[in-house]
Image (cartoon, rainbow, N blue to C red; front, side):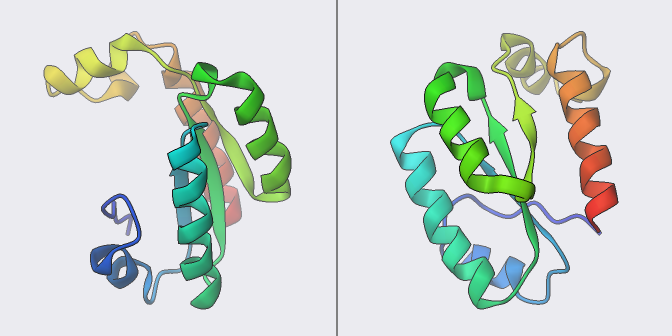
Length: 118
């Protein structure tokens, strides 16, 4: 089962992680993204939940993205580029994976890495 938890580290997130077999942590290469990632890692590590890290919109700040990727080490699952087509898919209630978005391939690669990790 895949559960999409709320962003942040509040009670709903903690409840989602409790009893979880694997956590996929999605962050962006921004100051707030790094801060939130550090905080959620404290919770994930506290509950001893294995995890992987995905960089969303990595290309808005490639230097910071590279630092996060290196810091993540073997927990790094992949990068998802910024693409306006994602917004169009959301607005039109159409899954990104069936759109013409360039991120479609990136998401498929990440999905395969997650399948291998669990």
